[in-house]
Length: 187
Length: 256
Image (cartoon, rainbow over all chains, first blue to last red; front, side, top):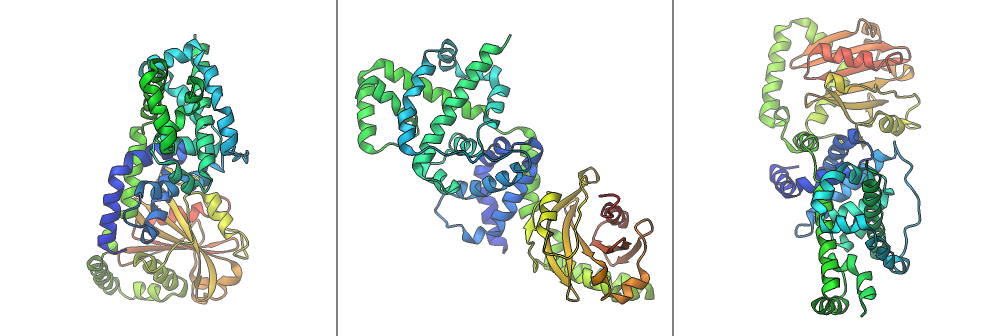
């Protein structure tokens, strides 16, 4: 790669560094794999930089490489669930289930004081994220950390947009439930 | 829409992913319904806090910095100027070192390995697999070579990192090529089996054992070769010879 391309690649990396790091960090099943994941993703992206189209989202493009590298690394530690990703229609049917959560006292507190609650429940949140099914975890993180559009997430993971919406909702609900449970079980 | 209907869309609404019409209907409802407005706003705050709680830590930052450096930093020894300087220095050292270096440079296995290593440095050779996982690299060679490739497991304590591998040929003999980084300097390791070793008659006569490997200095590069139970190993890199010797021993079946 010539110097100009290398400089361009480096310049594009700078503004997305935090997102890429956080994404790899929380997508990795094992924290010791994070550096491997980042290294593999960057090397692969660098080699394929000629395929990147200027003007499109570099963040979405790079996070795709991080996703693949993380999925490969995670295979050594977890069984990638082949769970059925729910479809758009099914997701919408279940959306009302969020109501059940709003009745919980703890959840109300979480909504009122999220920063204070999360300061105490940070480790519980990270563990809850880690235990999400692989693709659901990826979808949640691509949205929460990567701030990607549903369409971009769908492209990264090669799944329908409806699936992204459904899985994202399920991830959010699962995390909220885990946080509530964690808070209630604390001494 | 009623409140319960509105709240079904809370997730895609906050993500600005709804179609314009539904989005407009919800926005209208929120203007007139304080309870829903508060609920939506609370969910938005919570989601923002959740994302903020998943920020990277300093360890990840350091790993990122190293990964970026290894990926895009122009290695000084790859730039044409440095390559020319290194070649000139190598020639000088070869001349100063007398006939031994010259003989070593002509030895078939070392010569082929050094040439391949140079090709990698000059970016003329890509890896077939990029991974620091020994298991992945071993799996890559499975069924591609007539012998089993085994990679050492714990090298990081020595500052050595597996980068990847490729199936390459030395004198038309298929060999396993493993690329390592030692303090960001590339080290090439070649593994050839007993059958392939027949093609390297000069090497066969001079190979040391893993406990007493043959070590040579070719200009800036060190080369270490050793006979294995079934074949031979050759490591090349611009790193201390002792490091290569350690790496060679780590590849012996007993060590792996």
